[in-house]
Every structure is written in structure tokens, then in C-alpha cells.
Length: 226
Image 1 (spheres, helix red, strand yellow):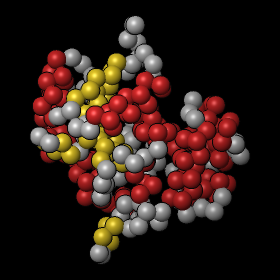
Image 2: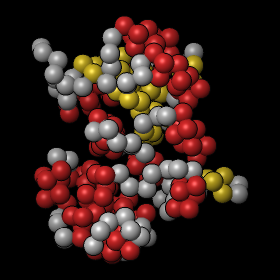
Image 3: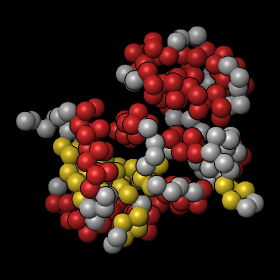
């Protein structure tokens, strides 16, 4: 089979998770090249041997830590984009990931559409931290904000965290025109469930009660031109 799609390297010490992730990516990019590594050492060996477009890297590995070792990965493959993954995500990890130059971060518990959307964003040259918004990370006295509550925009701005990607801004423009999710998905080449998840996050982030109000708030904040 001719390899005409993206070249992925999946790095995780759990074989079943790698297998599931590989099947998910192969379904979306059937002509991609999927390579797996179960350790940090194996990942570096592969990166030095052949080019990779996107590394999906578990933060916690038996012989390394994704955040601490990211500079070595960048040195081995400076053009490779990096999507970090973790089963336990906190605000400090997110801030460190951005400082270290990671292109995105997704929880392992994220839905398949959210992971695919993150990979799509990275392949477009964007950052992919949007899925973390569903965990509503924000530092507070005594720990993190509970899942399902709104993140603190002021804190995100102070940490340099992105509020909206270009993809999300495009969705906001569609919301302003009253475009339904199915039409947005068709126009943007996304699944309808992925669009639904993005719309849910966008309206929550803007503290809007409707799609039209989300658009109006985005315009008022200067995120979009009227």
C-alpha cells in the first residue's frame, strides 16, 4: 500500500491503548503510516531512524517523562509535531506542556472525535488544547475546579493558553449565521458529533445560553469582526 497520509508514532507503554488509538487513526487516515513504541527509548530510536509528522506521546512512561524529555524529542525530530496524552491532567501539566513547546494535549479519557479533532488541528499547523477544556482545569485553593464547571478565562490568558483555534472561530462564524451542526460538519470536513462537542465548549467558555449569544459575545470581545 502506498503511504500518502500522515506518519504517526504512537508512544505508550499500554499495548491495548496503542492498538485502540492506532485503529482510530487508521480509520480516519487509511493511508497513514502508523508506528508504535512502548518506551521512551524506542520512541527516540524510531525518530532518529525515519521522519514522523505527529507523535502521540504518553506523558508517563516507564523510562521517561514526556514533559521532561520533550527537549530531547525536539532535538531528535525538530519538525515533528507533538500531541501529549495523559490519564491524569492538571493545570500545572498544561502550563509546562505549552512552555516545553508541545503542540497539543488531550486526556486519554477524551472521546474519539475529540482526539481526531486534536490531530486534525495539529496537522493543519494549529495547537490542540481544546479537549482539555472539558475537564475545566483551573488552579484554585484546595485543588482543581470540578469537571463540568467553567474554566477561568483570566487564568488561561495569564498562562498563555489558547482560547479559540481558527477552527473554533470558523464554527463561531457559522453560529452567527444560524448554520446547523450538520451543515457545519459538512462544510468543515468534521463529524457532526465533533462539531457538537466544539459548540458545547464554545458556548460554555463564553458563558452564553445560546449559539447566537455565543457569536455576539465573541464579537463583543473582539474575537470576530461583526
